Length: 452
Image: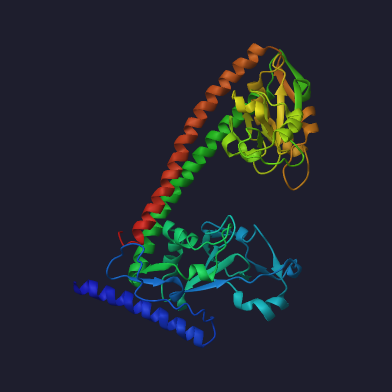
């Protein structure tokens, strides 16, 4: 082994010993709790190969791992000291405006001051759908941890905290964490994080890796931002063209209410149905609606009795328009496909079924109309917190249509062509975004294997 490698090996080993010693001192001084990890070294089950001059160590032996307390709703105040929620944690940033919840200054002083997040701490969501998101807290705002959040930081800043931050972004770190999950919902704490083996190089090597990742990710993030903007531009261009067509009606056009040119506008069942595996009768919801398809294979199957009762309401046929009428995906539309399963399908109330009268309006033209007007419909419809399309508003919605079905068909052909071209462009940019994300993962993997 060369003299250079010997020095680096000693430095990594010395750093690890310093971190363990600092942990013991902090426990003695009662600044952190003794969790009695009982880790055995050397670690026998090495996750992957690292340079000989690096060290494998458990996360809790090198870093603070502090979980938030369980602050209850009755403790919430309109002002005081803000506490962190999983909503505040984005990938790479903390946004304190996304969720603003407080406890009183008295409670902070008497109970929670030791949960204060310091500038430079790595904060992460450790529960729910957003688990694994992490960011460095970079402001001087007074903020404390709460349920489903925790903070990480090298003991006494002996290591480079951004090295630790980048480590939380790796596929390895997240997979290792999820491997300790025991419940149906992801929910992680000290006992899970403490078991993660961490590759630890010398402090100088940490700085070098961080510098390389900073530069690489700056270039990648810029390219990704450009691709995302181009993707957005393509979508907006199509939307603009679509809106322009329907807002500038021709000479032989007429204004009608949607309900006048449809034989039925209804929603699905307001209630539940009894499940029956492999019955062949489908009871679909908003999650089963995709552009131009229904996800039969993912949908629930119900008893024939429940189907027949609910089918009287929707009477689904191929070519009918299925439109999500509530929630985050409101306005997503599919045609009922030319499939034998269509005749055995009905919906929950989150889906509206719209049946254009084919002698008055082309169903594809009707679909484009609805895509164009969905934002208007949502705006005038229910004023509740959850977006919702009311059937009455749909039926009364005024639309412009050519009297000639042939002209409607010609408009559809133009829109189909532009839609196909737009989707092709979107596919190109979406693939570029995906490839850039994969490149990030690849660079991170090499960085923490000592291959950069």
